[in-house]
Image 1 (cartoon, rainbow, N blue to C red):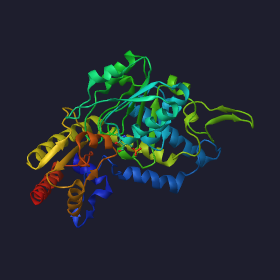
Image 2 (cartoon, rainbow, N blue to C red):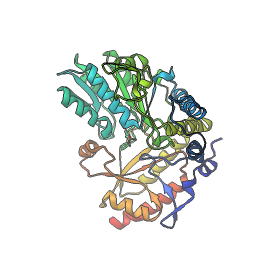
Image 3 (cartoon, protein in one colour):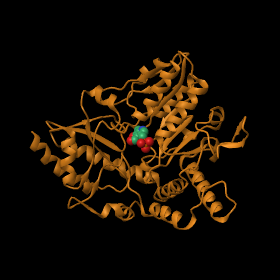
Image 4 (cartoon, protein in one colour):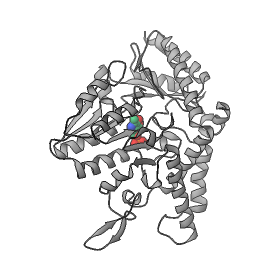
Length: 405
Ligand code: PLP
């Protein structure tokens, strides 16, 4: 049974008032709130078990190490990875994407080669590729999307040449809400023998992920968007690829032996985890994922799909509102414009009523350029949101729409 009221009780931040109104938190695409179990994990770690991992023989260090490695296995279970060696802890999806862009290009990209991303990427899956393409004199190509915010698969197929070396694409657009057909994108890339990475920043919290069923080569996500602390993230990669890539950063833990002349790198996953990691955060990420597995990610998906459909309907009932992104399959986020109003003004007025949404470009400036708009207002959902919150939001938004008319 999915009981949203009891879930809400798990999130202490939700019961406060903001600007003298009950908080309605619709900014989950930017970051999610944390359940008490995750907060307790952090407090417990710093009050009971804190000690640096992997290099201590004393009890606290071993406990801390065990908790860290247990979290790694939880991530493995959550995304159905074949081995925990393939789970790399990072500080977020941005670092995961940069790690692959930099190490892959260092090992495999040369002048004249080509990389494919989509035109709807978050800056963090665009800029790292621009950087490496500039450095290596390679070309970045873009999968276009149409006015509904749907990728053009035929155009994607035509982007491949013998020089295509890598594809990196977002699973769910943080701005348009589009759920991209990644299984198809992966299969097409593999028909051309090209590896593909999926930016799962906006999908991991909304739908079940099975990296083996998907067949992608890399999958990345941030902890803070899935009810875990900031500064945590994951890169999953197929072992064969991770073995082939050079280390990302040098330092402690990523080495097996070091002499003044030469270093032998550590085995997976440690080869990619240089220095003291955010081990307390990783442990809390494990707690967050176990919390979600107890509720059932399919139950969360169903609840959020109902919220998306309900909110879409409510927005459509306000004549002055235009939804940006009308793909058939959407998840998590709805972007919209209010006639005559700047999105920042809409966000500020909603805030006065205790409603938190995000406004602006959402780190996807090329999407704004495509639609010829400065930004959008975006509401984005989590498992603890309710239809009653959407009703209240729609009531206030209708008034705002009339004000600006
Ligand atoms: N990719 C997508 C689709 C996102 O929505 C975001 C953040 O909003 C990112 C990447 C970057 O995430 P982070 O800032 O947690 O690294």
